[in-house]
View 1 (cartoon, helix red, strand yellow):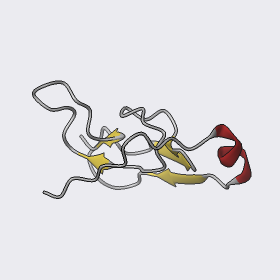
View 2 (cartoon, one colour):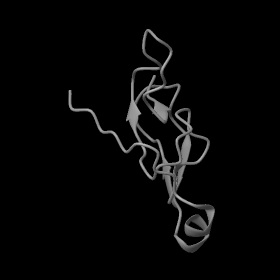
View 3 (tube, one colour):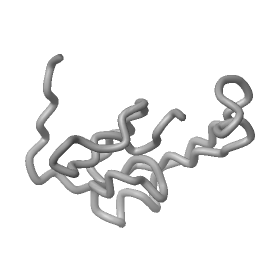
View 4 (cartoon, helix red, strand yellow):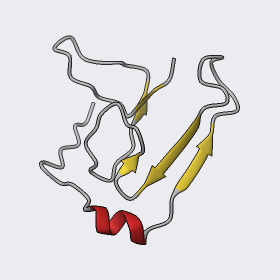
Length: 77
């Protein structure tokens, strides 16, 4: 697996207010995820479990590593 490291990149709030927001609604997949709306702005997923605000949105099935690191902004259950 290739690692993506952006270091301490944080998108400033001023940039968020200038950019459009994307809303994605989950319509297929596991029952637990259906109907979920994902709002993505310049900082990434709003309400992200990863809480990085680095402009990336990562979706995956792993909740966290054995050390407790959160890898995904949204966990597909």
